[in-house]
Image (tube, rainbow, N blue to C red; front, side):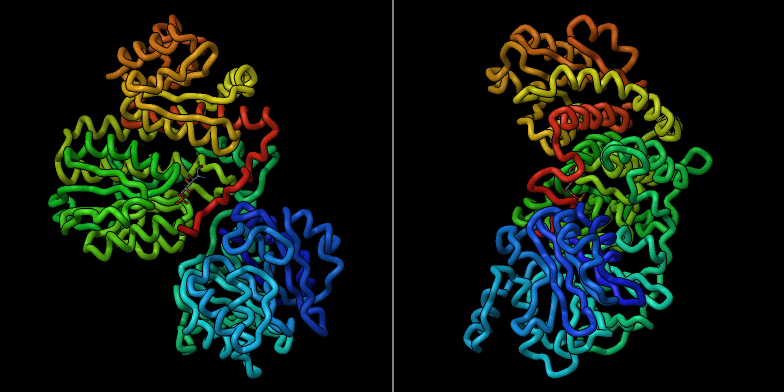
Length: 609
Ligand code: M6R
């Protein structure tokens, strides 16, 4: 929920930290700060507001000199966004500075203890407790003091720590919040994710839960929770810095929408050989796949919407029940799982706390976990029995687009792979779907070419207060995603309904000029979709219909405007249909002057319950 970065090396730290924070700002953006050792003491600069305000405050970094420091960009949990609650949080003497992503659950108890020892607190944050506790235990060795603190704090944390008395050492700690180390020649980094450091190094160490690392200019040493050294593997990041930059687009969201065909090629093509889906090094045996009796899909937000489509598609392909559940509900619903149940966890970030908690719950109940994840080495990926990466590349905009499309493609690949192992569909049916999967990226390119028509439509309706999405079956699932995308970035009230439900209440909201987006791509239910369009039209609604090219004419008799997608296998319709809905949300938000990449109150990954 917050972004942290730390640097130790031979160059000025402040500009490097600001640049790293700029790439992490998607994780939280209500305040920002840095702490740097200036040769004599720790200098801290922090402020409420966007990173720009911090950068102005320290003149782009030139106002604080020093070559070791930590930085933070915040999404508030404990304590409202304010200068004093911003990170870094420092100990009473100002000797120790801490940046933190996560939550210290027992902070109140620890704070009471420290207060009883005469320690004064300046902020309302849980993080200040960590800084003060480290100072309480500090006797000249920051690593040892941090080690003692870790035995006392509970919760989720990625921490970056510096101490003014030992200005050559930077300490990193990880538990249930992401943290990577970037290794360079004469410098080293800690960061919440690779985007913050890729400009400087591609050599990365993924820290495990409970590990502590000591970074100096010369090197990095990792320890377990008992401060015994552990050997770590160095991974090489193979994507380019451009992937994390806007590349001429006004917003990351538009860039990521346009990147979808390429992302789909990366997700799909290496997994298809000779007309069949091949999942190499796949950790589930054929016997297990054949014995499967039930699948749970667990996820949040847009990933949950992928799960909704996944339910329809997997049930069609496998003929076993698939239950899709919000991760935040799963852990409290006492789910019924057994050895023949597979739990599929879907997450772009791989660090959503609700999803992580659901994964652990399911694992504890004995189910196998297969995760579909974008961020390599993320917590969800590491705790799963099997991981299928989406290979969408870094997704920076808070509103997910290319992660959604690639998740959907991976679910379809998985369904076709399982269907072959289980013999649940014919070879012809399977190969037809595989053939269409290979065509999906180029068909999506055709859809994205309709950008201007969608922009024009957005210009007609961007000032509406309320927009409805309707559809049946996979079109309903797609409507849910279109509606979420719209409300998330444009702040327009929007609801998605299964069309058949309209007459059970919601239709009373339809009046002259209400905008209804009718998703009607699914051939089997097209006639029903038409009837629903007529129903809302006759009550005054303006209808934008999303349908396939071959049905455009029929739909055109009733809808006010139409966006078409090429026909494809019915499993893949949502993969094409989602793009116009993403573009519609984007252009409406643009015309309303919204902060598209960083919508209010949100953050890219949600690491609180
Ligand atoms: O990283 P995850 O896929 O686990 O995130 C889940 C949701 O928070 C996420 O999909 C959210 O709904 C998006 N901002 C929607 O665009």
